[in-house]
Length: 281
Ligand SMILES: CC(C)(COP(=O)(O)OP(=O)(O)OC[C@H]1O[C@@H](n2cnc3c(N)ncnc32)[C@H](O)[C@@H]1OP(=O)(O)O)[C@@H](O)C(=O)NCCC(=O)NCCS
Image 1: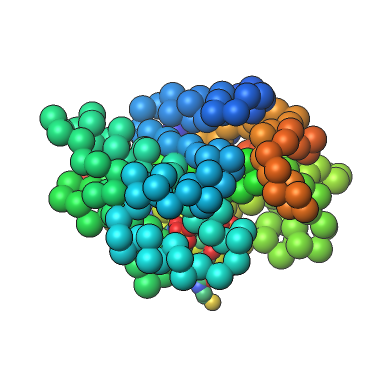
Image 2 (image 1 turned 90 degrees about the vertical axis):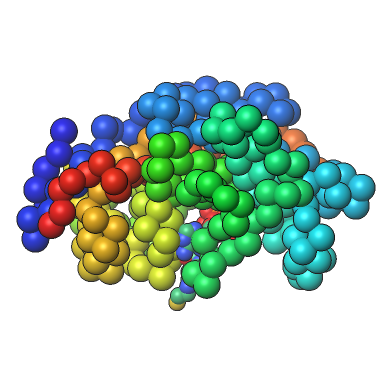
């Protein structure tokens, strides 16, 4: 299904928000995430906070994951939280990229050889020949990476469902997108889709989240729309998985892995295949 958007371009309407209410119930297992891959447009990788902590504590483990340049970057990261987030993201990304290369080629590079850097806007890049578009997100439940298949661009966001005050919601949402009453899950879902789309566009928060209208369908405005036009106005879709009422994560205070009794987590992966859109505005 597609629809015209302002200015005559064509944007796909999100096939709404696939929902899977699985719970992140065991270490090493995030049963909601594979559901994201159902359409086969991308694959995902995942890294639990406890795996990131083990990597942070043991240089010998990191040697199996990071290149020397990445190790030196890791050592330069200042805060403990940033180091753990960064490792969770790299762990998820390298795992997902290795899976991609395994599918696409006969040989799979070692994880340290899958070196990940960041572009000037902060978007992750891999310089290996044939490297796909990929996107990283981290939250208290761990690191998530989505890798585009078939030349697709991807953007990923993974968010814990936490209270989001109405004032903040009015800053990132358009009036028609706001739920009728307090609804942290709906607001988190909205935020995750907006951020996933902005990451796909390579903008991150350099463009206002209001530029991405999600409900009742995806429409882009302002800077996000200009970037989308530069990309050839590809059909844009987003898959969303909702992980149940608790998750495995680290509590901010103790740093220990424990079951977080939160409203759950929401993962969103936006994807687009520029070469097949054919619908230039
Ligand atoms: C991208 C951004 C929205 C992430 O927000 P977040 O919810 O705190 O973090 P997430 O865990 O979901 O995502 C972080 C990851 O997004 C990726 N990312 C950062 N900037 C990105 C961009 N412009 N496009 C795509 N991906 C981006 C990175 O991989 C980052 O993880 P890493 O730094 O460990 O590699 C935000 O950090 C951002 O916009 N940063 C850069 C743009 C910016 O603010 N510029 C200044 C303009 S005033």
